[in-house]
Amino acid sequence: MMDVIALTGTLRYREHRSVPEIHQELTRRGVAICERSVTNLLERYDELVAASAGTAAHRAALERQGRVILAIDGLQPDVGHEVLWVIRDCLSGLVLLARALLSSACNELAGLLREVAADLAALGVPVDGVVSDGQHSIRLAISKVWPDVPHQLCHFHYLREAALPIFEADRHAKKELKKTVRGVRPIERRIEGRTDAEAQIVQGYCAAVRSALTDDGRPPLEACACTTGWRRSRPALVGSSKRGTSANGVEEASVLARQGSGPDPDAVIRRSFRWAAARILKNTAGRAADDVKTRYTRLLDEWRDRRDACGTLGDAVDRFLTVTDSYRPGLFQYLRVPGLPATNNDLEQFFGAQRYHERRTTGRKVASPSLVVRGSVRVLAATLTRLAPISAQDLAAVDLAKWRETRGRLKQRHHARVLRSRFRRNPAAYLADLEQQAFRQQALPP
Image 1 (spheres, rainbow, N blue to C red):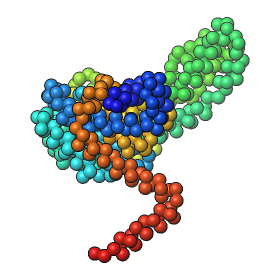
Image 2 (image 1 turned 90 degrees about the vertical axis):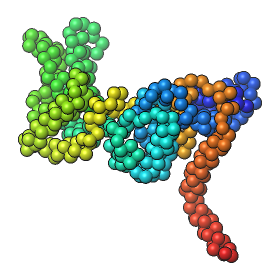
Image 3 (image 1 turned 45 degrees about the vertical axis):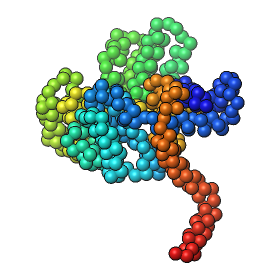
Image 4 (image 1 turned 90 degrees about the horizontal axis):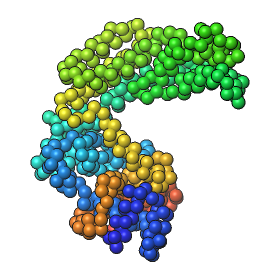
């Protein structure tokens, strides 16, 4: 039986097969099983792998590594659902803990961190640093459990939050910029089917215009409107019109490429906010920590002094400075600890890989609520199976008491989800049944 369970997990997480595909493969191998039982086998596989995982299971790897740098973040499929919290080691990529919580309060998160801290202390492996986003409950929880450990706040989340008004203003500027460019399609239709040199030049201009208008940048690090205006003002776009070419499409297309590329006073401000700030924080030159802090402080002081000259973006300057004051204690910890990442993007990409796997195997574009209900075991099973195949012998060696504990915890969460479904199906009958239970409870003798 363990052989079938191990094979089911391998087909699911290493080959990304759906339940019908797994059922078809098992049937081909001579295993008499119905499709619903395949789902049951997958659940048993997740539980057994999760029961054998954890910090203690990775003792050899962690002791050989000698230290850990932790990343923490939560995955919430939809508003109102539980949040799946994952604590992962940045150096080895191992998931040390995955747990679904009803609340993201400080005390709840601190309990998870203390559990990981106790396991690491038992192994004698120190925590050199922690990286997360700027959520206040995470900050407070980390300060409670590891008050002396450097806590890096994600630069990407910081810039996205601080420059939100800048991003909105830049997106509006791009929309207005598009209005100044009209007539690309008629020009393309006039040269359709032509292969001469003049038609190729016109096609090149039109492609440049379309490329500039459809480039949305990479917020919060690249401003789409500033990039669009900059590209359309390049000399290469206007060269042909200065050579006296004919008006059979070339000059018209080149003029179209130049439209709306005049100076935009706010563009310098919008571009400098995120671009200059991100360039200093990235520190590609490898400057010392004090030098990076000094340069960033000087940049913020310049923005503060020029706040009144920013016009409509004055409030955006205030927001950027306010958010920076909140994030400042955790912005430069990555310069102190070797290997401490400046962003939490690796864990975000880990969540993205999970969503990709769910999409390939279930067809759902977004994470399903079941990922949170069973995510504490599914994430561990998927990660460990992708790292190395898990055999039937590995599953047979799992502590049964720990497996029963894991399964009981999952049953409680599943039962809560069942109750919600029953209420949505028939609210009146659900509430009437509860009232009957309460009446019988009160009628019982003490």
